[in-house]
Image (cartoon, rainbow, N blue to C red; front, side):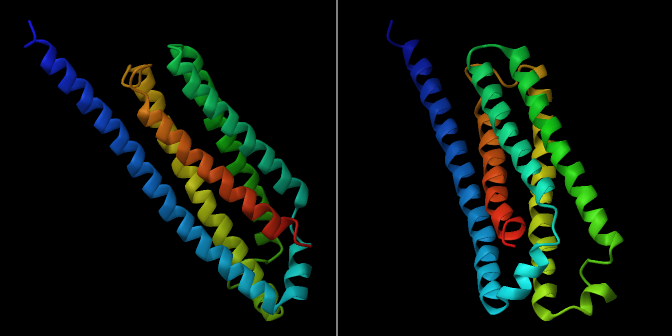
Length: 210
């Protein structure tokens, strides 16, 4: 009678180890991302200490309203991401897919806003390598170089997040993510929260530094 129980225990233990391993791997990835952006934040702080007045002037040319709007968009998307995970844990598949779709939509809104913001800067000749920017003081060139580099890298992460969420949507539809097996969706949520946290640091550094 005890023989059939052994495979069940082994199977359960195997699932638990896979879950912990997947979670640990995701946290390691998050840590490496924090190191990457942390290095960029240090570089920003160093250059700002060298050119405080020029950074202050250049920051005043950014659209604060759009930066704050994008912050609200991402914070709301973090909420919908959490609700998606909670819904699938409660076996509410349709609700989970709905909230995940909302998160994807908000991510797309963020990217559209960023596109228009960048397009306005390009229209005014403010972009790396442009004659207009190269004619400015070194501090302003550094500011906009960091602005395009760091917000561009962040935008890439947002794009990747939206793509990954679209894959999670397919997994949900095909029941590859269920109430008792939702680690993929949970890890996707962890990645998305990382993206949001990074933007919360970018907002004051660039938009509120004037």
